[in-house]
Length: 406
Image (cartoon, rainbow, N blue to C red; front, top):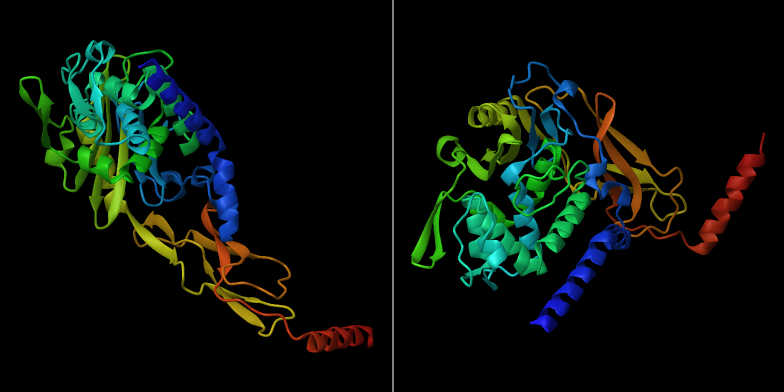
């Protein structure tokens, strides 16, 4: 047992080093692919809030609130979005995301006395009981089991405090700058907090995981119990009452108040709504989602693989080469009102042959009301060889002669 714990701790140290170094690793890989690292870290770009587009936002009792388009990452409405607050069981979104990324869903865990003895909301785990990581995730996300979260943390990281350190590292990587976790389940702690914006970032990443999306959109489910099965019913009432609802997580403590991270999908769009310390979390979440769906649409501004513009090539066998964006550019804009959107193309001043296909020659910046909100690298769609040496020399001489003539 002691040997296994040593191996696990060593593996976790390796993971922590990997978390710290991921940015530079990704930058190197991206450079090899010929893309612009400037656009790699989406959270570093400014976000658009409602004030950039239209007024008349929803009126809410929630102390902090936000609605985000999950595809574009744009904030469509925000109220105190970066204010750090207690977040109760919405913490479990991060716990699940990390477990899915680092764990084996079918690996079986033996429930410890620490996990079984956790206070608060519970799926009533018993010491020595055996459940898979996937079953524990259902218990944590659907029934908000604090005990299931500790069991998850112990499976992934041996001890909950080590797992919590990984939660904080993962949050930083996502750009969650006003977040600090002290436990895996959201039990009250003065140093345990997040913000509406940070929770939306974490949820956006979690919804990209198919198993997470499946669990948080499940209304009822069963997992093993010591005396048969445990019948789980999702605490998220939105799944029964709102068209397109597909998640995510409730949270309630005296300090946090009533919280909800809600998600819904309609017409190919995925929205995330967050309300913290709300007097009416269900209706206020509905109001936010309705606002996002009814007032906004997603506008395709550029498509990877399609010619966007062309660049002049000096000393090449052809004078121009078509370029495209290295990724699709989609922007969330008010319905039938896109005049504030501006596309700015920035190309290198002088581009000389030879060029290879996929070579970065500039970047596209998308601006709203003068603010950069997203962008992409501009890459060549085909290569361009340099002119034969004699022809190239003759051209250079001719250019010099022309430059000397009056």
